[in-house]
Length: 223
Image (cartoon, rainbow, N blue to C red):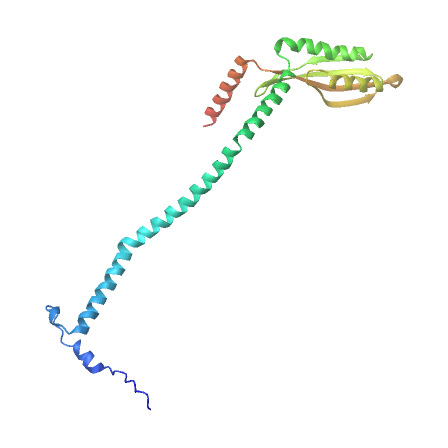
């Protein structure tokens, strides 16, 4: 038994081309079916292109910008969320810093205690049998929240006595440092120590306010 043959319809291209000839643009309703469908497809394509060019492309660009902003906002949210989770830890660390700063601040004398501290330094040297040839306080230098007082000294004595004096300075309850140390030999096996002793004091509220005004004035002058 033979299987039925499948016939493929043949397109008459000449007839199709004839449908597009002599079309009346003023009466598209009288056009053949194929030209009318082709015209509708063309109008649809033109509408798509016009919509893309005049409306959709701008909206898509704005959408892309908004998506990038969304990514940035999400990142900011995650960072702030992480900070909020660690807020208690940050507060504890800040409290520890405040306590440490307060402890260091207590090691700085106030203005009225500076003279007593200088006497302690002098007594530390005399207690070790050292002789002071020079003990001259210099010009006080104001910093952010403290003042620095340099004292130029020249001391004569034995090697071990000078070392013990330096150790005594380090053990003082207030902050005192030895700087610019120069040691030279003297007669009878003694040594001469030239150095700058620096001690520090904290500024009172009036001095801090004055320092802030001076800093603000300098910034204003630079502008």
